[in-house]
Length: 174
Image (cartoon, rainbow, N blue to C red; front, side, top):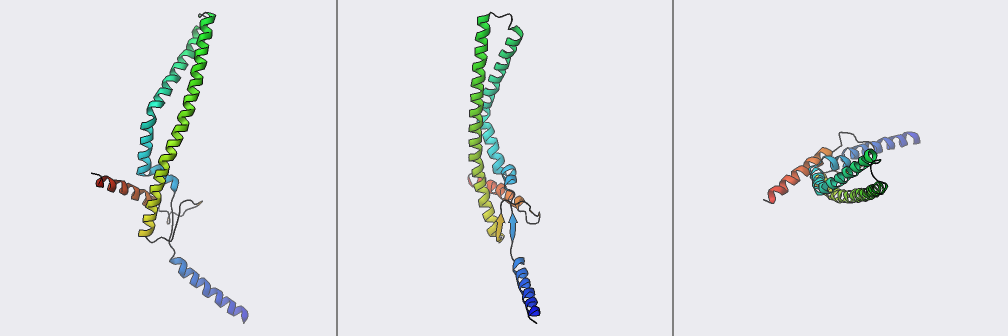
């Protein structure tokens, strides 16, 4: 008799839990995809490319000069006097040291700027997620998941919201 009562209580609890779970609305967002594909992310990437293109060209120019000097030393090294050869080698060493410094500083500055821009995009994405959650009555939205069922993935909604947000703010500024 006790076993039958326990079973009935368990079945009732499971039924109540299932009814409550059906009202629970969950969504998942692929943050990496938002940071790659959303219009603010693409705009930020183009902004950074434009900002760093001058320094990139300068580094490429110095690399070309160093390569030309290296080729000169390899081909015509025997024709140069010992003093000229040493001077050219010192010049090449100096160019390589300068080039490595410039490349390191370039990477550091580029990473810093990318992080700054991506944090802005992430903040915009979080606001978009909040707006979607409130408008569509989500109980829980996760930004990272090992597995996400496409049925609850709202990444496309977030990307579209960010695109429309930029369009709307563009209309406001005119």
